[in-house]
Every structure is written in structure tokens, then in C-alpha cells.
Length: 362
Image (cartoon, rainbow, N blue to C red; front, side):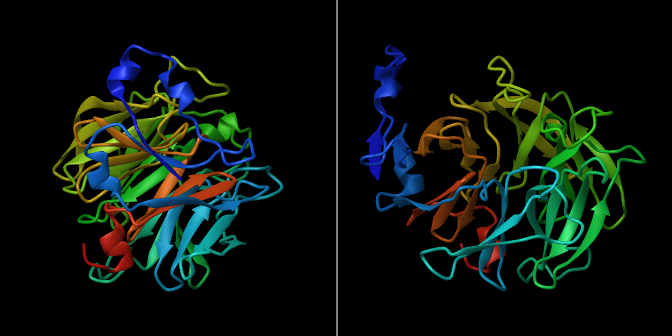
């Protein structure tokens, strides 16, 4: 693993600066992981003792989205990428019991085309304990509505939470977060199922929603996106970050958004004051997460980009290929790159949800 210090002053006047930095594994054309520092504060986030490596390299795209922790089996649940209508999207279960991180594949009942997801406390659950369930964005297919589906991975039971907006079908629900105080589910609806030819043409705008599982109330809280995708709360819950991956549609459209927007969260129920938080220089920001210090981590076209709360790029976990999401565990972060799974261990940063999900102090 290489640790690279980036000179932004040198890059400012040399457009070819970054082309000389791409690492490769020895004696191969495959990408190799490196940690790239764009700002001195990067080391306060990643740490000087961080170690990065490739965990798995598979012939199929097992490591795509979600990355939800289940404490009972000490495993991460990662959704695979879409292959065909003949094969529902699998859930890849990666065990954290061993540094080899063994995996297996499973499917949950009534979960057809799983994408993003998060841990889930149903109404009335004891929030002093670790989350008892998971909720997935099911993109749906030609026969099933797109939906929010609650899953108990320990009993293999599932329950639909939301299948429509007041009678109107969603397009392709993409990612979801549960507000840790209100229990509301905030989620994005894009139309990648249509682009991947397993959903019909969209019939409503691409928007961000808030849903109350206890009452059934559902409302639009933000619109004006090309493709709303990942979303995440700041640690103080005062800001919501939403990525727009409009640069990827039927083909790459480089003049469309590859942008993270930030909003003020008003009264824990509404959004206001949309502004541009960051723009990805490589690919587009897909899954978005925060650490406990308020830094924003997003999977992009060459790995994971890390910005501080002011939108300044601190550094990258560079893998040289598209990453769709990431997942924190205590002292480490996993990077999902479809057929490959990477890990950076012994990091200083702690994911926003790690304290709750893993039941550890932060």
C-alpha cells in the first residue's frame, strides 16, 4: 500500500499531474490501493498507522451497495449488483469474525432488487439496544412495486413498510437513512431500474422523501435532481447530504451533476437552504457517510473521497476504479467496488452509526 502526499499547488498548473500517480499491483494491470493526502488534516482522519488491502476479488459483482451491520452474527450485509431478471439481487454476508472476512450469499423473502439500506428500529423498539432490523430500498421490477422493505436477518422474515406515494408508484428507490431521534426514514428515488431495463418508464419526478413508519405519513422534502442517490445526516443531525449522480445515465454525461448537496434539517422534518457541498473530480459520488467529527465520505469514480464539513477535500482511499459504497466498522472502513472488496484498517475515524450499530463507545 502506498501513502501519497498530493501537492495541490503543483496540480494547479499541471493537468497531467495525477496521471503519474496511479498505482498498480506488482506484475499486473489490476488496481492497487493507496491513501492520498490532499490536506494535512487527512492524517487526523485516516491516521498514520492505517493499513489498506484488497480482501476479495470475485468473478461477479458481490459488493455493490448497503453494508448494514448485524450484531448477532457480527457481519456486514452488502447488496450485489444487478445481473438479470432471472437472478434477483443477492445479499453478500461478510463475517467480521476473522481478518480473512469470509463471505456467503443469501436472499431475503420479498426482496427482489435490493440496493441501498440501513439498520432499522421499528416503531416502539428499544433504542438503547443495537438495531434489531434492517431496511432495504427494493428497486422493484416489472411485476413488483419499488418499496422500502424491513428485514430481520436473524429470522429471515420481511415486512413491507412503504410501496407507493399516495397511490403512485416510485421509480427505483435507491438509498435510505433512519433519523436516530424521530425514527423517520429518509430516502431517495432515482430511476436506475429503468436505465438497467428492469423497471418501466418513470411516472414521477426524482426526489427525496421522508416517511413516518409509525403513522404512514410520507412527503417530498427535496426535488430538482437529475439522479438523487446517496444520503446521510451529519453527526449533529442538523444537515442532510444528498448526492446527485446525474453524470451516469444511459451513458456517462460529464456535464451533468456529480455533486453532493447539503441542506439544513428544519424541525427534524423538513429541508431548507440547498447548496453545493462538493463535486467529485472522478466519476460521481454514490454512497455517502459521515464520521463522528463531521467529515463526509463518499464512494466515487476512483475510490472513496473524504471532505471536511466545509467541503474541502482532505484525501482519498484510491483504488483506481469505481466504488459504489462503503461501510464503517470500529477502527476500519470497507470499500465496495463491485467485484472487489477493499479494507482500510487501523483508521482514526469512527463512522457516525458505528457507536449505535456495534454497541461500542465512541
